[in-house]
Length: 337
Image (cartoon, rainbow, N blue to C red; front, side, top):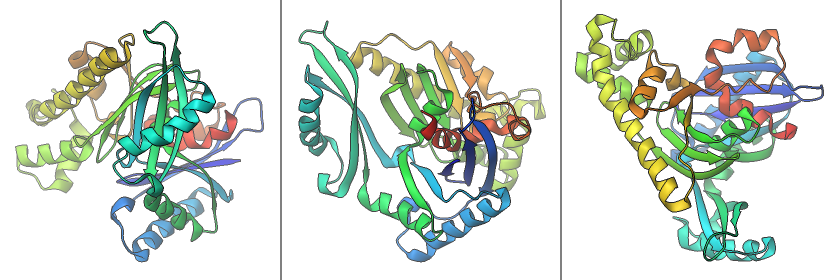
């Protein structure tokens, strides 16, 4: 059994997968609301214990017994960057990456946990190039996550960024633009053959949409959230008044995707992606997928994090909400790769 737990801004998600059979099977999944202080902003033990207690409650609700866990770090709290080197051997890259990390990281290298991966070797470039993906996180933040699970007597066996987990959930070395539309951030990654070449996070996301409805229609935030879930971008509801308040925000998000694609084409000389894959709770908003496709003039679809899993009753029950579980599912599938 493998367990993945995703601690998001507005909820905590859990997925348990059994990889002992011919195809991985979804054994358990669940979510619980979380409206506390983000882990990155906590400075006291009590807040971490509160999160730990929520996870304990979720584990009890889903009847999970696995005591080892794979976890993720939010994209906006990690440093992810593809760096170009001259054509180097793997050993030379391992030596050079520390110096490069010192130049790029927003905190001292001795206060970071980092790893690297060679994602491309281009011998046809002049001069030949090696592209390396550097991923780092502040050690203090990583320790907070470890502390949360230590209160549960659980062992954290693997840590990665949310986007890396999302990509794994799809499998088969995917390519395209992956967009994780959460409550607090919209994370955008350009992916080629399963490797991340570019990642950026923007603050226009689910909460921004709710606030737009609140301000545009004069509703309190609770009521505005209900309107967002009920009507979304569908112009046939309430004479399109809700959709009208949301379209400018989505347009800004799509503009950021266009900028990311252009940067990828210019900096990495990659072919322009033709497909966009959306996930996260906000991606389930009514009408968002067809409107995003219209604004981008690209094919846009929802990520199916359960595509690699064998058919089961649990999978069938959660099919309408699968976009919420992309990160947790990808984490649970780590041992299957």
